Length: 410
Image 1 (tube, rainbow, N blue to C red):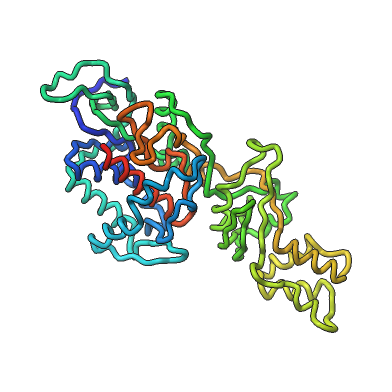
Image 2 (cartoon, helix red, strand yellow):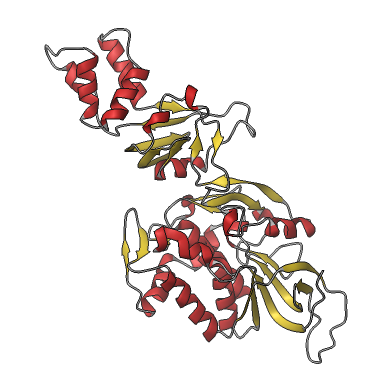
């Protein structure tokens, strides 16, 4: 371990300068707290910068608690109610950043995600937050050494990096999950939780493309690039958005959304299939039911092509060609086209996952402050916590809300 060269005391040390960490540091700094923000990368807000195709899908107008997954579905309510999309929008507008609603309440910058990062850095500067980049945290432990600085209460923690040691009354872990490791994602947050005996709900990739297995056994393998608006459902969860075929399986917003609820065979020996409605609210085979209509595969294929891409229509009919064209057979085919089952063999993993589901067990945290119940002064915020949003700006809103909750409590 590199020996530290300096020793400073802060009211709070925030580890991780992503969306949640920045917001927490800003809110604590506004309250006059001396805040140190440590980031192991060479710049802050890397996920913000790549989000929304570089335009940052920074929140969603329709944010509600039921847009989030957690072992405790009520946990997120308090933070989300106290820092709303309107609060973040007001901040964005105060900096003159132009934005637009794309679809389903999703807000994007007109120009660039860099504007959001610049805004947050400006806010941090105004709040006197000290930011250190390329700071590798090597150890966080309870402080057992006396504080030699007069006038200070005994700090609870010692944080050692590759260049310095800091003492502080509060440590905030905002290091995210395991998704997109090429951007520096690590298990650091979970490791700290385990160190302090804080329970963790098993992490797993979420908002992730699904794999359908060996192309030889996947009749849709050659449809790469074909897309359609569908309803993807699993149990009570339903998402009406685009589905996209990939060379390995399925992607697109509808699939990313439903993937967060899907359980692999590793975790469940009898995983439930995902069902796809290929043409929501349409009777695809209606032309075959008209009086004196011809009933054969050519007419059926033409009927499907009116609502679906041609290649997809052909493949669906090839895979489910009825033995005859009776009314019963037509009804059965129609039902299948609105509830087509797929049982994935897995996901594309953390490399392609937008977020990590699971994380620090919310039962161990205060819903009002994000502070650990058993370790006063230790906080977990953002993606590292077992709160995962749907696709479309919800995860950023959780980052802002949980960060604000902790920052206002320090």
